[in-house]
Length: 422
Image 1 (tube, rainbow, N blue to C red):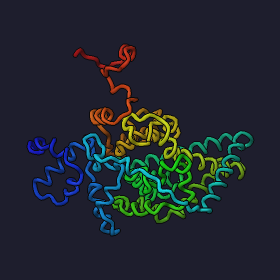
Image 2: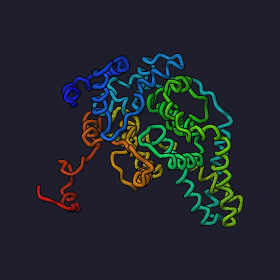
Image 3: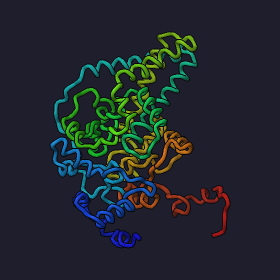
Image 4: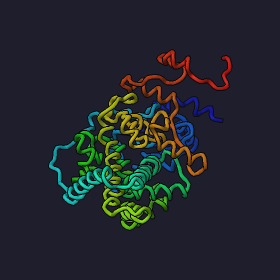
């Protein structure tokens, strides 16, 4: 049945993306064969086809914004979905180094944000002091719980579900995640996902909202203290968001965000300790609200700053994102950033799903078991191996059982269940 696509597989895979963009012009069996082969080669084994490839979404978006789809594509420096890949191992064919830049320009400061974030960090420091002097233990446990809740609203919600479509969720889980996301107060999931898609498509260019080539401070918090570069807005208009607009849960949050956010991020964390265990207003406000919010913000920002500067690059040595264990722990698995920028459609955002270093994966896997999460996308070991050999920095250790570099003591001490002689 599929003999013809399999025969033409090597030829199709070798086609440059400019030919893939002509996919919309293919007719009949040619279009079907091309779609089948691309799905079999560039997609993970269990990936489910999206309504359209990103190249087609650029064409559709450009018609709405009067932008040239070819120029939009030529400016990209990274992949966003599996359909962006130009190579069998998920990469781009072109040289992206020449596109990475940071235009020298005078930044227009946003003093409202500077004052607000200045107060936030001073308040958080005072909250840290109160944690050691007067806050009740219940308040600190509650603050930690709110940190976990808000963190998952970003990692499992805005990031892996809505920005990358790395898995799908039924409406109860989407409602839960949008509540968690609102507690986090890092903008509505719609806007968060839009900016993050731009970040991946135009990583380390002036269109990247938190362009790492501008330095650690800018990529951490500085990008929020000044006006966006015009390229961020221009390229943002060229990213397809039709899937987000089709999600009623996302659009409900977007519509009522300025009502829901103050209640869930500020009022609830302050009132709960006061009502349930008679905590003081000062401790509730500065510990459960200000310190907790400031902490999760900085953890998220570290993914943009520290994880773009410190760590190994076993999957692609040519990009800034790196594998940062410390960030992964605090950000519930978001620190394996070199892998994530190479394979952003993997729901684990990492090659391995070790729960202690990737709590978000444990969260998603749990809801997959009860049927609320489904169509979890991942990448085959063979594809990862090909990419590491082609662009990795040599820091990747072993591939698994039988690797020539696998330590002898690891093999001898391994527990093998239901072992059979080969």
